[in-house]
Length: 198
Image (cartoon, rainbow, N blue to C red; front, top):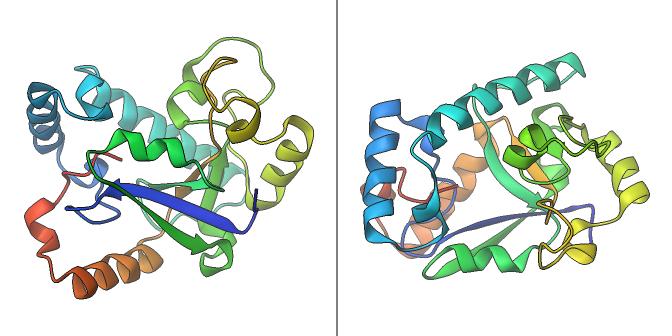
């Protein structure tokens, strides 16, 4: 596994880095309802209160990151993984994987959780990395102690932590990659705004 590799997974037809949190609560819930009715993909299994919980967890993670010296430039994050987690491609009908070197981001604008933000903040099992947000420096120490979830828990048999999540609190690099996708794929990215459930 590579500490320098950040990965983002998305639907091929929709492009990278669409974000439900960028929408109003009404818009986001409307899209989630459509996805649930379709029954397709991982997002169709999300609960009715998903967006309410997500907003609360993102707000909490942001505050915790600031307490550690983080300087988020946005109110909500975009999501990536630290290292490969190819099973996430299964979330999508036609999944794609995008790679960005960690040095492309200002370290003060990226935080980490040992596992997805939802179980990290909500599961009550006493594991030392629960309810914690890490900086670029501190996540390395956690991985050295506990290993890569992608390796020791690839199939989810040992808990909900199956990857290390990266929260990107800055749109500048994200926009560059979204624009690159538009120019490369010749697609109207705005036609799919918010449809990739990440």
